[in-house]
Image (cartoon, rainbow, N blue to C red; front, side):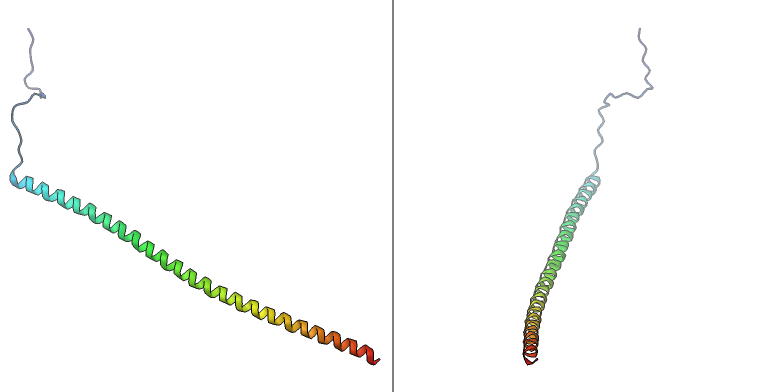
Length: 107
């Protein structure tokens, strides 16, 4: 004959069900909604931050382009000044050579 220890906890169903009250269900639904809204807000903040970073990068790029354009203008002006200086030097060299040639003829 088998003996059973009836004091031990078993996994058998007693037929009793735990049903949450109406307020508990309502509270759980509200908590779920708050969690859902929090997740949505996190996504909005994340996209907002990425949008702000994008705008900042676009501003930096625009500044770079305007700086680059200004530098190109400066380079163009410097090249023109250099060309003018080279042509003046050439004219001076020609005058100098002419002066030397004239000086030799006088001797």
